[in-house]
Image 1 (cartoon, protein in one colour):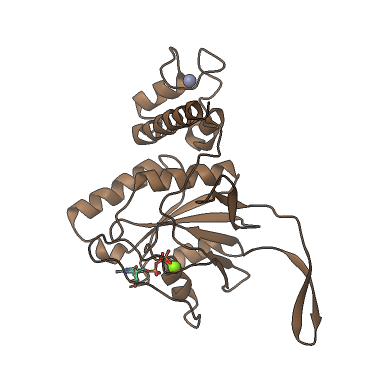
Image 2 (spheres, rainbow, N blue to C red; image 1 turned 120 degrees about the vertical axis):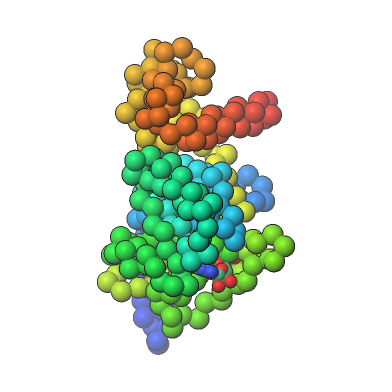
Length: 268
Ligand SMILES: Nc1nc2c(ncn2[C@@H]2O[C@H](COP(=O)(O)OP(=O)(O)OP(=O)(O)O)[C@@H](O)[C@H]2O)c(=O)[nH]1
Ligand SMILES: [Mg+2]
Ligand SMILES: [Zn+2]
C-alpha cells in the first residue's frame, strides 16, 4: 500500500518486508465491486484534491465529496486547480473566482492553489505548502496528477495520458497508486483517477461535521438533534442565508443528506 510504514530486512540486496506498522491517515473509497472498501493510500498527512477548470470540466460534486471524505478521515485537504494555462477567458476567470470564494479561506476555509504543469505557474508555492509531508493526490482522470508528479521529478518513468477528444475526460491512464519521493522528505502519492468520490459509507448524522465552516454554528440551533434541513431556529441554515456559510456549500450538504436518507430507506 503506498505510504505504509514497515520493518524491512536487507537480504542479498533484496528488501524483505517483515511487518507492516499500524496505519494512520487512511484515504478510502467504497469498492466499485460489492460493499467493501478499498484503501487508496495510508499514513497520509494531507489530501490534494486535484482538479482542472476545464479538460476535464470542474465539478463541484466531485470536489465536495472529496473534501467530505477527507474530513471524515480527519485528513487536512488542499484544492489544486491545475491547467490554469488553458483558462484565459472571462468565463474561466469567473469560475476561478467563484471556486476561491466557495472553497477558499473566506469560504469553506481550504487552501486553494491554482497551478499549471505546462508553464509551472504556482507549482513552487504548492511545493512549499506540502514540504516535508506525505500527501496523496486524488481527482478525476485527466486532471494532471501524474503530470504534477513528473513536473516535480522529471526523471520519473510515469505514464501521462491524453484526453478523450469528445468528452475532454481522461483515459484512466494511471492504474495503480505510486509513491513519489520529492525533495526534503516530501512524498507525493499518485493515484488512479476516480469517476466520483463516493461518500455512502458516512452516516447522515456525521455529515454536518464534515463541513468545517458549519462547526461554529453546530450546537446553536433550537433543537439539539437539528439536521440543519427545515427545522425552525436552525443556526446553520440562518448562517447560509446571511452568507456566512456559502449557499453552494449548504446546498451540497442538503443534497448529501437527501441522498443518505434515500439510500438508507432503500436498504430497509
Ligand atoms: N494544458 C495543460 N495540460 C495539462 C496540464 N497538466 C496535465 N495536462 C495534460 O492532461 C492530460 C492528462 O494528464 P495526466 O497527468 O495523465 O492526468 P491524470 O490525472 O494523471 O489522469 P489519470 O492517470 O487517468 O487519473 C495529459 O494530456 C497532460 O499533458 C496543464 O497544466 N496544462
Ligand atoms: Mg495519472
Ligand atoms: Zn440546525
